[in-house]
Length: 245
Image (tube, rainbow, N blue to C red; front, top):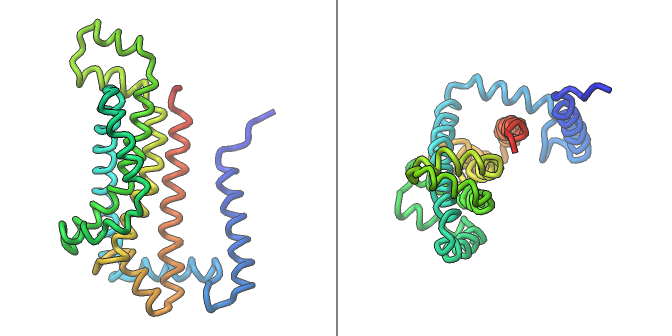
């Protein structure tokens, strides 16, 4: 029996979500929702508006820097704690405690430190994503078979070489899972940063649309962000399944 084609699951998901969306639209009406067809048409009009692209570039740039910062810091902290038991015992409860704090409460501090520019959005996105990446990386490195690390030390590998040639390949599948979660949380953090205190970006446009009850813009931006997030997440899941365990 042949396996199902890889596109069947995403296609069924799109059909199911669209059907539920249409039913909700019929129940709620024009006050709070737009139909799928109307939203797609509105998004097409938004993409054709040259005033929209600076906002999209601002969000893309902030998210890209935030994700890069979250991934780099999360991997560095996770690997360091994974190979050092004492540091792990001290830092792990602190990371978990910080992760449980609502990040919104930290945003005023970030605004004071970085101002209203793109730096605050980058920092706010990064603090959402780096802790999950650090925790997954730490646990992945911690569970590596000790014989692999001992072999690297017998071969007199330097710490960077040990990390690059043994630790990262052995822990890569679990690290990749942390990166998937970090991607989603960093995107959420970046958009939230734009919604609270920003003068550009998709989050800024969403807050303006909410204040003006502009349902078309709200639905269009929500659809755009959802399609982007789901597409990248499905791609990362596909790559994750291809990694050797």
